[in-house]
Every structure is written in C-alpha cells, then in structure tokens.
Length: 328
Length: 250
Image 1 (cartoon, rainbow over the protein chains, first blue to last red):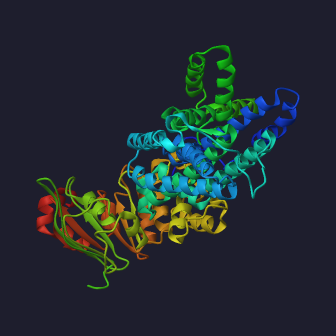
Image 2: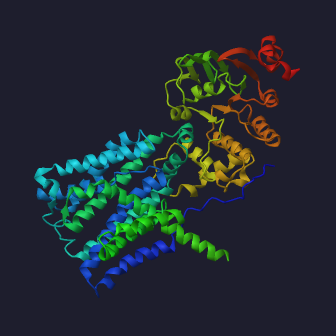
Image 3: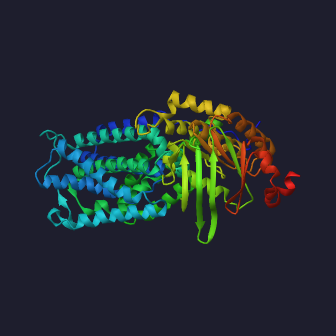
C-alpha cells in the first residue's frame, strides 16, 4: 500500500455559483436606484467606468490567473476597441450593429497576430514582448494625425443601435455595461471550466507534459489570447462610449500595469476577484485622490500589504476569514 | 521487420564534440517490452528524448508503425500513439489525479476546442480516467491534488496518464527512480499486468525489475549498443559482463 506523507487534500471543487458573486451583480444592478438620491450622473459615470475596467481585468485574469501568461500590454486592446469606435464615428458610422462586431474583429485580429509572436516566448520575455506591442499600439495611436494624434479625438455621439439612441441616458449605458460585464464574466467562467480551459490551465502547470500527451500548447494559448483580446476590445468600445472621447493615453503601459494590479488586488485566478479588484482600485483612487494629490503614496503600501498578507487578494482574504470562522 | 512498432535506425546525436547517441539501431515488436540498460551517461535518457521528440537527432531514422516521426513535434508523435513517462516526475501539480488522467483521455478523444460545458463533469472522460487509475491502484486517490500525492503515487499517476492515451508504444524513463522497495514492487506488478497490451521501451537502473520484465534487453555504453538480445543472452554476454554488469550478476 502506498502511503502519503502529506495530509490528504481533496482538489478544490470548481466554484459553484457563489452567493457573493450574485450579490455583487445585484448591488451593481440596484446602485442606480440609490444614486438617484445623490449626485446621480457622477455616481453612474464612476461605476460605469469601474465596470468597464472590470471587463478588461477579467480578460487579464483569464490570461494571468488561468493561463500563466502575464500580459503587460492589455491596455492596447482597450485602446484598439476605443479607437475603432472613434475612427468609425469620424467617418459617420456610429451604429453599434456595425461598430461592435468591428471592434471585436479588429481586437481579435491584433491578438491573433501579436499572440503568434508573443506566445513563442514565455516568462519575462512574454511580459516584455507584450509590453512592446502595447507601446507600439500607443505610439501608432499618437501618430494618427487625422484622428487627433496625441490630443485624442472626441466622439461625434454615443453609439446607436439600428438608429435608436440606446445609450442616450447615462442609466441606459450603465445597464448595458452591466450586461456586458455579466456576459463577459459568464463567458470567462464557461471557458475556464470547459475542455478548452482545462488544456489552457494545464499549459500553465506543465507545458512539456501537455505536449507529450498530444496537445499543441501554442495553439491553445493563442486561442485564449484572442478571447482575452476581444474582451479587452469590448472594454474599449464601452470606454469610448462612457467618456465620448478617445486618446492614446488609454493604451499607455501604466494602464496595462493597473490592470495587473487590479487583478492581483482582487485575487488572481478567481474571475470575480478581477471585478472586486477593479472596483477597489478605481474607488480608492477616486476617494484618495480627493484627499491628497499623492494618493498613490497610500495606495502603494496598501497593495504591498494585500499581496504580502492576503495571498489570494481581497477575495482570498474573505475566503480565509470565512474558513477560520467555520472551523471554530 | 515491417511490423515493428518502433524501428530506430542508425540514430546519431552529439552535443558539440560529445557523441551521446552513436549509431543506435533498435527494433521493438508488438507487445514487446524492450529494456535499455547501461551505466550513467550512456545516453539512455537522450535516446528517450529523441524518440519522444524533445530532442532532434542529427542523423538516422525513427519509425513508429512504419511512419517516419523524426521531424514531428512531440504533440504530433503523441497523437500517433507514443506515450512517455518522465525520469523526473512530470504531472500537473494543481490538478487532481483524476483530472490529470481525464486530460489524457480528452487528448485522445480529440475535441478540445470546446468552450462550453464543464469538462470536470463529463462522465465519459471521468469513467475512462477512473478505469486507468484503477489499473495502477490509484482509484481511491482520484480526488487528491497531484502535488499532494506521495512520490510513488505520482509515478503511478504518470503510468495512468500514459495508459489513458491507449498508446501504441510507451516509453518508460526510469519509472522506479526514487521509489522505495515496496513502491518499486508495486510498479513492477503494474507493468507486468500491462505487458503485452502495447509495446514498451523501458529504461531502468533497477536490475531486478529489468530482468523480471524485459523480453529483450539492449545494453548501451557511450551511446552505442553493446549487446542486444534475450535477458539470458545478455546476462551471459562476456562483453556486457566486462563492461557493465560484471559483479552485479555473479
């Protein structure tokens, strides 16, 4: 009989529909009602922004948290999505029946082409080469003189759907963004636990083993990269509609870094952690920036504390506290 | 000659001036268990790497069921029916034992571009994975994360992964490495049970295991096949006794 020296530990069951996640979406769905009693447009704008970045953070979590692919250039996809809307708008195309699919196709193409190159590398090289492509997109956007160059470009109007001004009110845009966030979340979840996701996660664990059982790891990773790129593009589409303005700053490497910070802060490899992280980061930024110009002086140490003492980010912290109470 | 599962002809590989595989020719028939033995540094693991595709030979031919596989990447060789275990245990540490094997079943099943539906809940995958785990005596540990299995259990898990691939040829790179005597015996028993179902190439230092299992033995020294034949012939080959086995088999 083989005996195990380590305590038997069953594999963690894939998270079921977590009450906390449902609650989180419920709070987001009800927030506009509460906002109606306060500075409504400010609150709606802020939370819409949170949700937009949550969508992008989901894509980053898919790559970093499940694929082990630390991407340092994901803001490029936000920018590509936003610029697709802006450039189409500048040529009079504002209907999202056209611009949304276009956004997804353009960002998927960019992901396919750059992924083909990036995914030949791994580890630090992967980080650096995704950063390089991100910067490339940033400088290309800055040199688009007909579309505002470094100064950016204002959208003629928010996107319409079959001619209807569906995003006319902030509230409509808010709920549309929430819808896209929930859809992105469910898509990522399905992907992670699917057959494809199992291969994608396995490639992070042990690529050599995956190849020797017959998987072409590179191709699977590229498909994952395209999915994450398209989701990033979607975030860009929504960001352009939220701000009605697009500039190269959307693609700066700081933005890509912030996306990683959001995912780490919320909890890597959990998906809902990405949403929690995006919300905490942007709300802290908003709150602290009101107190002091040097808000990062407060946020920096906070991030260090979370990374040091709450290994799984905020989501991990809650889980371990819950575990402690249920044990007693 | 043509019905050989694995046919290696005149394989050569050198790293700079160091010749690690020097004209190796080897043939494994259906259901045969062929052991490759030799002192450390004889080029046994290098040979396995070249067969599985992680190293490219400089010259020669490798045929798997008559197909030249020498230029194919490892994943395509796997699809043609080549499975291997590693000298240093290679499993997916954060996956459960069952998921490790289910992934191999999925690889053989050939449809992994499915983005919806929970893979972990697929009965067909799990049943076949469970059967493979049962063959190596790990079915009662199916839910344990691979990282938490004992060393011997991980070695057994590697065998289960290979089994689930239903290979034509299984390459075993020191399956007993680092296991205790009891665990070794278990692995020998499992291999005995599997013998005959598919061809196997076994590289192993444990001579008791080799002589208990092998149909044929090749002795490798300095990248060259010194002798090849039935266990008894090899045991009594004077060149082999002098070069390698000598005292061990007195």
